[in-house]
Image (cartoon, rainbow, N blue to C red; front, side):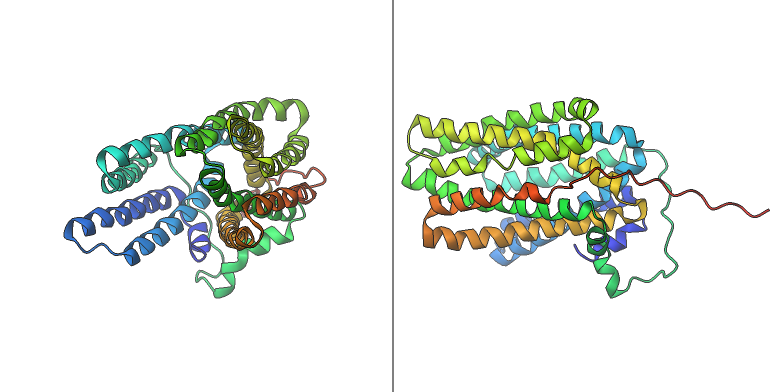
Length: 353
């Protein structure tokens, strides 16, 4: 996905969004086709995963830039809060439905349904309508190798985006790195049933719905920067509690309580942070910046998950989970310390007499 960020920057975003949806639809559709022909291999599954992941990163980056062209600045937080609410709704509903579909219809039919969902997404984006202005191109039309790093350069050069960038990469990476170890601990040593494990993470997702609904009222009352710092700090306090997990109903309630607090804080933080990032990014840098941001977050999550797998093997899953929780307590130090002024939109060049 790295070279796609600069390439997308100077193109209309809606066609890119449709193209990424169609690419994911086509890539996923190769799986049931190959299965029906008896030629499906593990290598093909890996290649499809790479294509889908690259298209997903590009879609997210282009959608942020497109959103900023569709809405006035004062409506960005409302839109991001609604996206956040939708994301937690799918988290609550999606896994149970997916598990039921796999059980009733099999994994191949579920992959077909997943592929069709991207086709429906493309049709929905096409139905938006309206005219999207073509972004102004740079003086040099050809993309150079150095352009691939433009997104990272822009982030690291901004005094407010830089700490938020490292905070996001470290926080997401540490939270996700502990998830496989928690599965090993709960389903293995502590003897929880799979349905109990699923319930422990599905039910608390209601906190995401509540948090996303409160994001705008909290910003209106306390200000964007204060909400970003306070809620960003509060979300780091919860995961360390997972190190004290024990078997039985009490342990299950502990996990649900920790996840509810964590998800509620994330439900408030995420739309505020997404809006803050859009406001702080120049219009001609959004796609490259969001692409670099997402690539780094996903890469750091993969790296930290691998590292914590090794630590879990050496120290035990409970100790490794506790270590991740302790390190998360330091992530608020990477939040922006002062409020930043919103970037102003570039003024049109004066016309010659």
